[in-house]
Length: 400
Image (cartoon, helix red, strand yellow):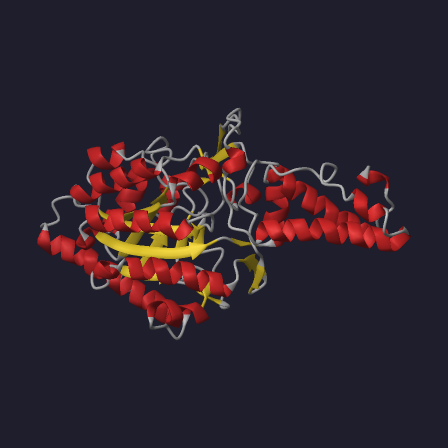
C-alpha cells in the first residue's frame, strides 16, 4: 500500500531509512503500521506529509526509549558466514596514527599497527566491516619482515595498538603474528604494545614468554549486548577469566568499556561488571580502564543498514558529535560519571580515560582535563611505562 503513494524523493529516502531500521529492530513494518485514519482526514500533499510525520514519530519514540531485547528472544544469529584467508604482500607496513584521531575530540594519539586486516567476529556496530571485505581476512605475508624495519627513536616512548583493524588475539599465533609482535616488543623496550581483544584465545600467551611492555586489554559489555550485538565473540565471563589468568601470570591487563550501550537498566548491568572487576583483580595488575560509546559516520550508518543484521544498535537518539553521530552529551555524562565513580577504589593505581569523546566531558566526569591531545598522550604513556618499569624491577623481568 505504501508504495502506491507519490512521495517525493526526500520523503522516500526518509521512509526507506525508517523501514530499514524497523526491520533491523524487529519491529512492525511500515505496511503493518500504516495510518489508515489519516487517509480520512487529509488529502494530496498534506496527506503525504502527515504519513511521513506519523512514521517519524514512531521511529523517534523508539530511538528515545531505552532499548530492550524482548522481541529478539526468538531470533537466532545466522552463522553461515564463510571466512577465508587471503595472503598478500603490502608495499608498506600498516603503521601510523589511529584512524579516528581528531583535534575535535580528546584523543591519545595512539599509533596503530595492522597485523591482520578485517575481523572474524561480527559485531553489529563495528566500522571494520565497512572498510574491508566482510568475509575475507587479509594477512600480510611479509608483516614479520616489515616489522623489523620500523625505525624508532630510542629516547621516545611509543604507545602502539594492534586491535584497530582486527582482533588482536582471535587468531592466536596462527600466522606467526604474535611471535613477531613479542620479538618487536622485546627489541624495543621503549614501546608499550597493546593487544586489544574480545577473544578468550590466550593459549599462546600462557605458554610463551610475554614481554613486560605488552598490555592485553579486553573490550567488555553486559552479556545481553554480547549475545545480541557482538556475535561470535567470547562471553563476558570468558573474557574476564582470560584477563584473570594473564594477570596472575604477571601480564598487565586493561579494560575498555567502549562502546557503552544504553538499554533498559544499563547502569545496573554495567555496574555489576565494574563491581566484579574491583572484587577479582589486583589494580596493580591493571594498566588502564577506558570509557567510550557508540559514534558513527554516515558511510558506516549506511553500511550497517545495508547489512540487514538484526540489531538494535541504531535504536538510539542521535546527536551531532563533531560531525559524527552519537548519544547526546547529557546521556554521555550520565554513563561516564557512573562508570568512573564505580571504580573509586582504583583511582590511585589505574589510568582512566575517555576514548574519542568531546573534550568538554573530561571535567564533568573526572574532575580534571587535559589541555591538549599531546598532554593526554604524555600522561598516558608515563602512567603505562611506570607500571611496566615497576614490573621489571619487582619481578626481575622473569616473564620477558
